[in-house]
Image 1 (cartoon, rainbow, N blue to C red):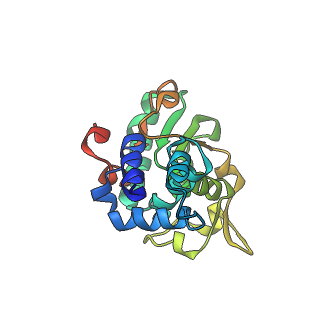
Image 2 (cartoon, helix red, strand yellow):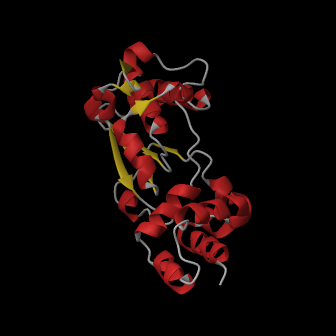
Length: 220
């Protein structure tokens, strides 16, 4: 019984992740971390635990294979365009409606918080900003909700004003509360976004590099 092959098949079927694009070595490493304490004589038990969607082992596997790489204002042109679009086109045409943003996967939260900042800079009142952020990794969602970041989250030039939108703390930098309140984080599978379809239409959607790890059916 090949546990790596089983894990690869499940990741493809449940999450749309392509083993070839993700990398077999990534899956092998993840399986090794998740099942490092497994007994050699328990392959059926191990596989049964892995097959249980929502089990602790499955969530650990997901947390190990997802790509956590992101930072504030990644590809800053996107956020500059967002601000100019809202200022020049959207706001004059929608004097009262809320501007809705969807970030999937949101990873550790930099993208949705980065979307909130230019919307505030564009003059939108907080009550008119609604940002939904979703990810399949509980580990990354916990980091996103904490809103605590180190210097590696600030790589873009120009970077966001730390004095304006962050508070210095022992752990590094924490997003200010008025920005945190604009983002709603939820666990979701990119193959099942029924909850968010009910909240549509969204005015902007950020899906940073998600498609490059998905197989063709999942991309559609």
